[in-house]
Amino acid sequence: MWRHIVAREAIHLMLLLASMALFHRTVSAFEVDGASMAPTIYPHEYVIVDRIATMLRLPQRGEVIVFRYPGNPRIDYVKRVVGLPGETIAIGRGRVWVNGRSLNEPYVRERPRYLWGPAVVPPDSIFVLGDNRNSSSDSHLWGAVPLQNIVGRAWFAYRPFSRLTWLAGRAPELEPAQ
Image (tube, rainbow, N blue to C red; front, side, top):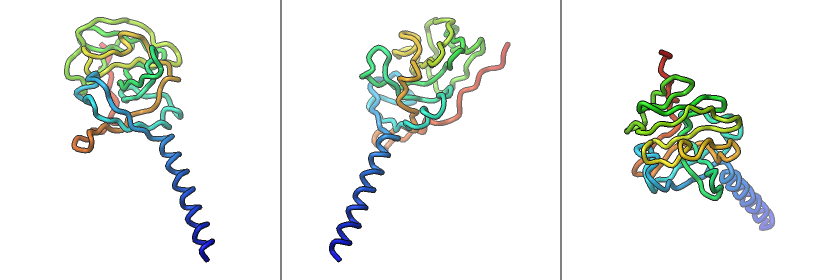
């Protein structure tokens, strides 16, 4: 009788460990260092990241992602996707321009005070910017992010649970062509 109980508990323990390992491979938490994503995500908040979605599809414009910084792959960055492969990106007149159309970005508090581009996002890469446009180290400084550097898509941010922010909302819309 006790062998049956021990065997059953060993199976339960193995299933628990296997599911924990699978969960760890598919969902992770990352601490945000710096204010480049404010007001969406503040320093020392955590983002919960889906590691599977970006393996199955290309990141979408407006998604917040975690990726390995191209200048040092040991460092993880959190930024917003604004440009997809093959798109022409420019920054000027306080706006981001995608293929000549202005990007409507309600999550940006202060418009960019710099000029950049135009330039085409290389194949197998994306263009990312921090929501705090004027205080962000991002693609406008060091270029596009290779798709292979993407860790995952951020679902929500929290610190700890007193402030919970859903990050997987509607994609920003391009203004009509003029």
